[in-house]
Image (cartoon, rainbow, N blue to C red):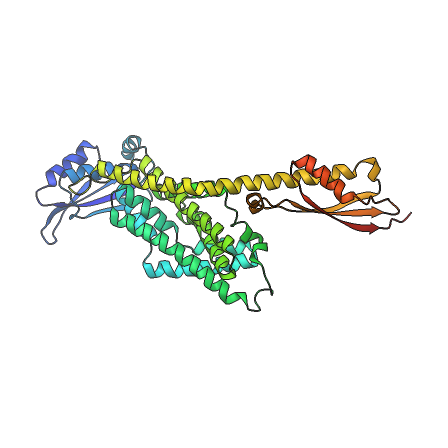
Length: 430
């Protein structure tokens, strides 16, 4: 429920009150005794979904932008008369003007934005190096990235180029800054006692997770953008949703920075690709949802519905084109992960099945290690499999065991792997 207060310009009182009467809205009117530009103040309660349509009608009746209109959130309205309005205005979204106000509130001042972004990136970078998911999530609470993403989409659908440009600029600048901060932190910590000597960031699970972008990453970003848009237009849960948006952007940006610091171009490119995919997907889903929800600009001599539709379509085409290009990378990574995982499952199963045969009694597999990655598929490198075989007592070990494993794995997987077999002697008490 909202409480709307409007200062009525001189000469428009009758037309304004006529609109409220037509809408069946109860109101209270006070004479205005200020500077003389307004003749009265009218105050009325209305469900939040009815604010936009009523303000549009009041605008046609003489309440222009140079007047004063205040929309307040109310805790409770006690009156049976309000039921009719609630039945009439049954939507859930907030008004266009409230949406703009919330978008502006979510986009902080530049200095505040930079400070929170730098701090969140430093924390996220430390979390990556510590392989601490809890630390990374904590950094996301600080990250201020939801505001610019929402601001860009709101500005586009409402034809506010200044708002849209500010949102896009803040997003691009913020993510470039995050990559730079991650790189600086990496350079500073790389040769210090805070990290183990010779640390290879590619072996850290939290880093590896963000250097293999696949289509599941796209779904995460799309969901985050939709959740952000819903939380804003329904005025619920924005802080928690902001964490989801930040999770999709800050950790991969920090990972790209670490890739630069360690000189691993593959890490930097893979994480950078993930950042771009997530950024485009978040903006795409938020933009589509706001437009589908019916948000449109107030038509005047500078903005018209056709122009806004063109602007929305242009931005959608640009975002979708970018996603299609990056989807080639996502598809390649997704396919390579499927192929390598399938090979590992098949190879491990075939090796165990082979030693379960009677002629290999006394031999057991103690462990298998498969070294096979997506880049190997592109370069044509064969899979590398290491098998540790336990030998019980006087069990006979065939001299050609490695070749037999090779033939069995080749038959099972359709590839020609390189097999290395190690042995672990065992003594079993009677």
